[in-house]
Length: 331
Ligand SMILES: [Fe+2]
Image 1 (spheres, rainbow, N blue to C red):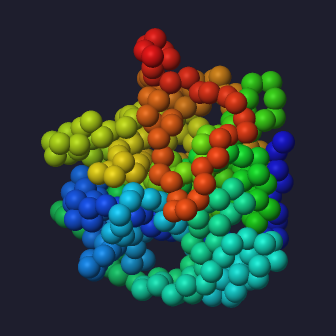
Image 2: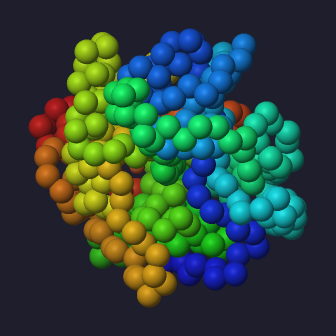
């Protein structure tokens, strides 16, 4: 069933802003994100590396933290003001969600919480400002990612996740449903005015499928693929380049040294006007996933990063998307 967006949410979320990943070899992961992906390193400490896109003035949009296991630690959203963190905390308390106020370097008031399907979230209202490097063209590396854009999470219950996030202000831009039904297989939800900040797709979850950065253009995307090949990461291109029907993204997916997945893509269309209706796609319509080319591998569909100490549940909806292996008849 399609949920309705709450026009007066309890606190104001403004955009996807930062993702915190635990990695097992910090230096190797730093090298990957700096040299193969092309992010800017803002700061390094003994146990963390802070990175950002070339146009970002906020201190970080990707934090790599050293740890014993590969994990997705938290998905970050910005809220408008410090007061919105106070309101979000009150909301979590009232809704009975696990939550905790924390203090972190280079971030203003910060609240961690776990959403009803187990996604580990981190809200903050401000960050330290650094140089916007969007016109440092001579320094651009690989895909030269400009800014973080969105996250995709696999969940056992897309309906529950979508009901929750629309109840606190996200809008449904596009969705996939099992053919002939309103059973949701995936939902693309936004707050910042393009097609998505947060995506939930049916699968074993909660697990972070990918986080995504925009790149300047098609040539930057292809250059990223060439750089990955040159630096020995050609086999870690998980999918693409290709064009999604959903959201119109020209995409490239890569796996980092811990198999966390990052998407580079050219940007989405605007989705702002309230009379815009969400676009429906049948699960069997291959064009939703790729407008042209071959479907994604099983690896792309079924592998994702777990959150710490969060049980992974089997999906409620039994509906398997067509994979490359299906098309090729490989078992
Ligand atoms: Fe994506």
